[in-house]
Length: 489
Image 1 (tube, rainbow, N blue to C red):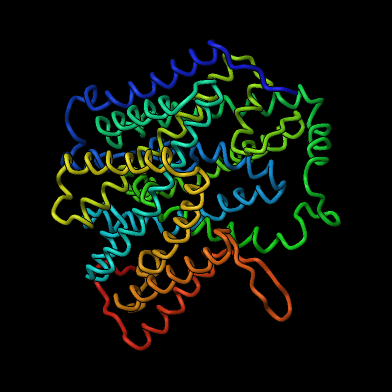
Image 2: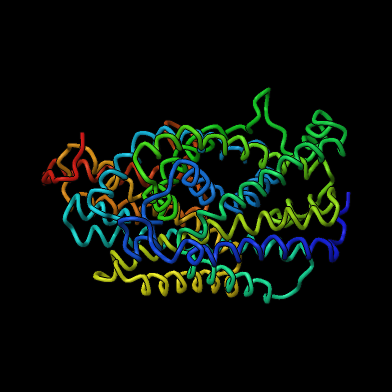
């Protein structure tokens, strides 16, 4: 089945929905009566929504910046390329929510009591260490930059599918994102996350209903897709040797997911700790959607989509099956799905820079806006001047680096007397060790260990975290730390 040319109808529908979303987000501060939420200053209102988001707003916001446009593009692409292994994203989005339920309300209470806005703020209050604060802040900043670049790549992918040549459409998307974030702050993605999720649900549900009908039903679709994928041994869906990397990648991804500045920003913007617990119960509904999204990779094989660029699988599939106008709607859903998380990512990065790297600027909303613009400009430069694969590789490294903040942020909540020096040493060794392994393995997410004659691939980020925790444990025994006011039971 060949993808049809998009035509003007697809472009018109795309522009209509994408422009309407930008307009709503950019003007939200004006029709909110020009004042911040009760008890919040302007910078806190811009960067954390005044910490007043209730259960439903938080659900859409956290889901919106956790399940990004790159998820819609990359997960089906991975399934298209590897088969069942690409579904590792599903168990990771199940494992993560018990972690959110147990840990994030504690972090919220500490942040609310101390008016903290970032992970580095919380670590500074716990350990009283400026070097450790800088380490956590820099990890968050370098981890989120390529993530923003991937959102812009997602927008460029669907714009290219619409038949628009050159980089001008990408620059227009960047300008739109910049205005959307500058004017609306966190209220812009909080509002438009509703629109984004509804659009993506419509697109995905239409796909899982309509596409199998075109392909003769699910049984025929799976049978056809199986002919194009590697054949596993026995009755297991995974290939030989894939079970351990599948499990360890899921675990390391789950531990890292809510350490990123954008996901933590969504959590700290909630109205109460109870709001976060309710969301930990409700957010697994997104995992169902993710499973449906992943199946698009199998549908592409069954539909006869052939491409060497797996990131174009979803756009080509939509163009092959749907009428042009609905393809335009689906592309707009993906583009809006990039706009919402990219805005939260830029805001989270701006909070880190103004509060933790450039100290004394945390209350300056103008400085936060400028930093957020600079972060997006850097992400645009990555897309324009670097190979897209390089941005993907940087995002892989970003996941490894953000995972090294886990001991200071999460283990630091316990009553164990960790020292700031031990945490900083563990962060340094874990980051250097993991980065070295990644480059040694050609920037792959797993490293092969030789254990008792067996060679098994394991998540590199998880290996680096274990080394990090080991160093912290040894250093803490040698140099015990002190307990502070942010220690909780």
